[in-house]
Amino acid sequence: HRESWLEIAFESCGKRAVLCATQPLLALMATGRMGGVTLSVGHQVTTACTFGGGGQPLHFCRSDVGGADVTDALGVAMTSRGHDFASRAEREVLRGIKEKLSFVCDAPGDAGRATKHYQL
Image (cartoon, rainbow, N blue to C red; front, side, top):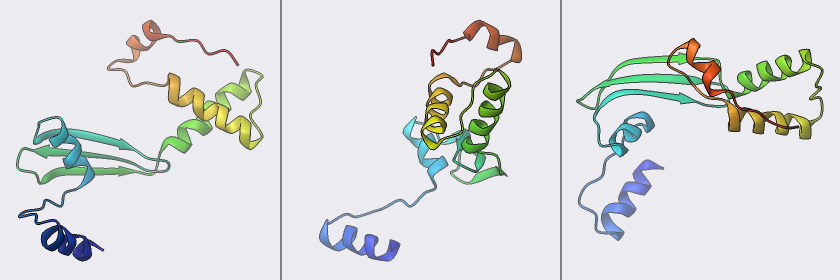
């Protein structure tokens, strides 16, 4: 498919150059940087890449823990507090809670200051 896309870009649209890059590198470039760290959390996989400035990844790390696992862990925590999320619709509510209220903090001590409440 890439060859077809490139052929259309060069011949039909009159483009002179094209850049094929990975999503982590494009994320860095969108912020005006060529070096840094990217973290991508997908449904079942989390990846981290570090770039040194030349566009080539220096390090790449992949983990089989993703957003679905975080939702499952939240479900276990909520079930231990007396809430049950058994049906598909209830799991969607749980996913919505995770997406609206979860965050990453620099230090575990910072998490208590950013407490948010959600009404079921």
